[in-house]
Amino acid sequence: MAAFEDWLFDPTVGKIVAVLIGILVVQLLTRWLFQRIVGRVKDTHARYRTRKFVNFISFFLMTVIITVIFSDQLGGLTVALGVAGAGIAFALQEVIVSVAGWFAIIFATFYKVGDRVQLGGIKGDVMDIGVLRTTLMETGEWIKGDQYSGRIVLIANSFVFKEPVFNYSGDFPFLWDEITIPVKYGCDRKLARIILNKVAAEVLGGYTEQAAKQWKKMVKKYLIEDAAVNPMVTLIANDNWMEYTIRYVVEYKKRRSTKDMLFSRILDEFDKTNGQVSIASMTVHLVETPEFKVRMVNAEKPQA
Image 1 (tube, rainbow, N blue to C red):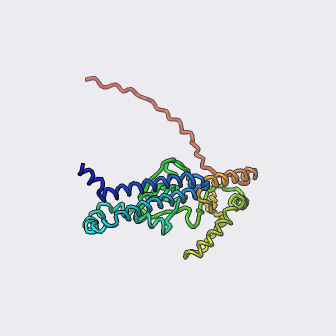
Image 2: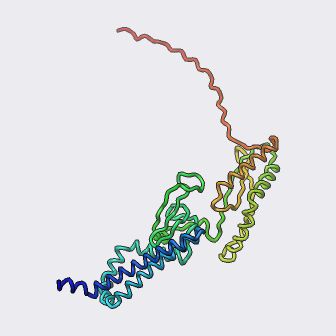
Image 3: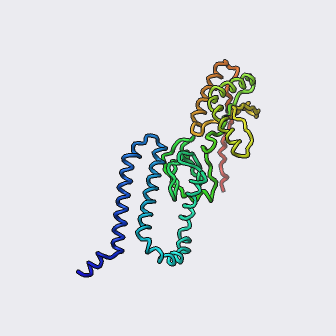
């Protein structure tokens, strides 16, 4: 009985109980904030940032509670932690680099939630940035175009120090893209160029103005030339047809739908020319092979 009373009134036991009570209170407060505040935020990005902030404050408060309650006993751990530090750093070097990568992502703005990036050979939209890993919703792979594949990919933050980080929607949320249109020889090539310029201006006009404003900000921020963002039509001639190329800027999430609109409008406009301009294609004509007459001779073997 006396041993139980000594254990019950032990200062260390009391501190552990105080820590558990403090953590429980913080958890209850966090859950209440999620229900009352975070759950009522309608904007997706604002709700995500609010949830991450509440979680950060929760962990910070729990750390403060533990530090304050055990502050008088932390001094004796200095030597032990110093000796174990080298071994821990070696064993957890990947984890440490990932944490450092998290700081680089957050403070150096490598990318943010909602950006489309390529990390470690994986392309997708950033769903979450954790302390150790970045979560992506994969795009592409076996799916043509920039559509979601449905796979959620977790990538260690240490990749930001090991491989290039491709950001498709950072300071300039537009991409340069192009399509090629083969036109038959003998067609009106001047009319073809007029049609292509007209379609490009109508379909891509909205992107051009927005991209020009964003590119001006890029020129002020970085040492980069003032590139042209207007649609451009160029022509090359090869052995089979005249090949027109339309180069243009497009919002990074609308490459596939923009190509669909361009090709649909171009084919409609070509059909209106009554054959003056038409799409070229490769046709293979198989020539009939000549008739071969074969006569089989049954030669008898000489008898012995």
